[in-house]
Amino acid sequence: MFVHRILDTGRLPLFCFFVAFIVTFVLTRVNVRLIRARVRWFKNVQAGDLHIHHVVFGVVLMLIGGVTSFATPDGYDAPYVIAAAVFGIGSALVLDEFALILHLRDVYWAEEGRASVDAVFVAVALTGLLLLGARPVGFAGVEDDTGKDSLLNPLIPPSIYLLSLVINLSLAVVTLLKGKIWTGLIGLFVPLFVYVGAIRVARPGSPWARWHYQPNSRRYRRALHREQRFRYPLIRGKIWIQEAIAGRHDLILADHLQRQRSRMKDEHMSASGPTPPGPGG
Image (cartoon, rainbow, N blue to C red; front, side, top):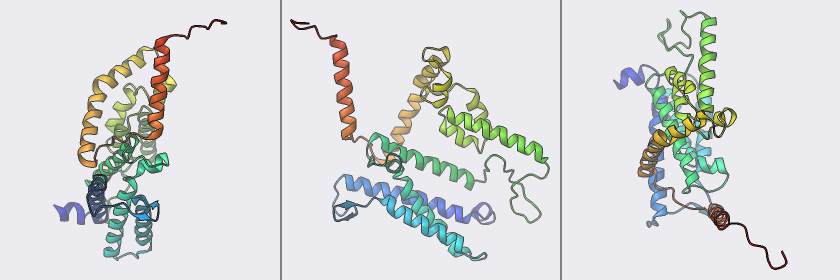
């Protein structure tokens, strides 16, 4: 099966990337959890007072792997496969700190740090689909005379192909704007998902809901009901899986604590009512 599905289809570099990515992410999370638990011999990388995050090493490895793959001549499979594995290692290190890049601050163990695990899960899912032979929207995956996968199906007229491509990509964009990230991304490989996602009601906090749903409208109430009834249990399950793999993101940052205190103060002032005027008021 490995020879038939991986070697014969030319997916060995992608397979090496996939394995290196998953192994690196797991080992990285084990290492940082041991560092957080203050286990001896496991410490952060420091240069004086500077904490060097592993995203730095990831960027360097991605650069090395990418340049090596471009510089490797045709017919040299071993360097290309090694470059794919190095690129997978670097990608895992970068995406494991995706939230740090997104927020431009160290939110690794805070609530925002879950974005890193989400990014890793998305990367694993999409790479796994490619490894299984799935093709994004517009790629038929049929064999040409050389026995290799061709990009387009010659039996489909170009105009029909272009029309279906525009429709599928448009529906994928609508699905993503409705806040259904997983549905939109998987729909790039299985178009049925974007057909359903584009028709169904948007998530309450999505851009689509802000643009088209009034706060007290029937559609907004419907979206809120679906969110509370169906999505919240799924989110709790996803968080449980994330914490089992990547650790608890329960660190409360100073600015979060300050916002919580301000919100509690405002709620207390609202509950106590207006301040009565003084003697001269």
